[in-house]
Length: 289
Ligand SMILES: O=C(O)CCC(=O)C(=O)O
Image 1 (spheres, rainbow, N blue to C red):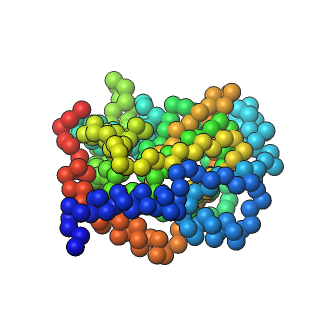
Image 2: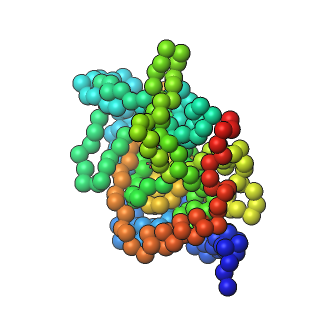
Image 3: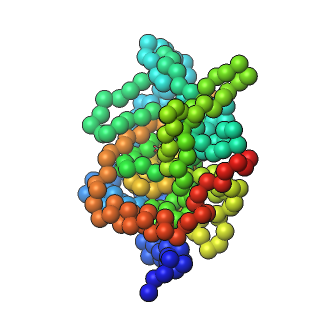
């Protein structure tokens, strides 16, 4: 019989078996053109990431999007620019000795664009090595194309929910104040569930490392300019960036709503099992910095 104490070892075994039998330990690479049916069957339906080479080499953006070109082409457009003092937006930060979910300060500035598309959303990401994206997951199938610089994705499959230190944290927003940036709590208080793991797989609220054996390593994949990553729905991901020669990283991606099929139902089961076995280690450690 499976007891509450037995749930965690069972989930760890599941992570390891899925890597051995199905996911592997690195992201496979394939060359374009990719047959749509094969892509759907091999990667989307089986919820596996893949790095696609050569599918956007014809994009004029790869050679046209210099700083001078973008400034000229987008001069009349307005874009939401997100700023934080640490380059960490939508991440757990500290405010008044407590962990909060920090939103960036947002301003409408005239340098941007948006694409018409049938996808749920199309995004352009313009940044530099100073910004990073903390671990989270989305209910989207993500087609992610890098135009300049390199993006390093740390990928953790949905079966590893038990190790992600998800906690409910109050939302705060970075706001410029007289003494620099301040994190101002939303009023009335609103909480969001978010991963407390940083890039070294340390829980930022308790300073505990969760990367100890027997937990499997995240899959790490570098997506260079001209490459496309298929990032499956529900996979946890953290993203770091390396600049191109002009000090920029530019990417374009499309989010497609996922199918709420058996994969979603199994992920919900894993979430529930993870919550039963994590107990205290998943709760924020308050009043600590
Ligand atoms: O490019 C990034 O830094 C974040 C991308 C991301 O998290 C996403 O597309 O879901």
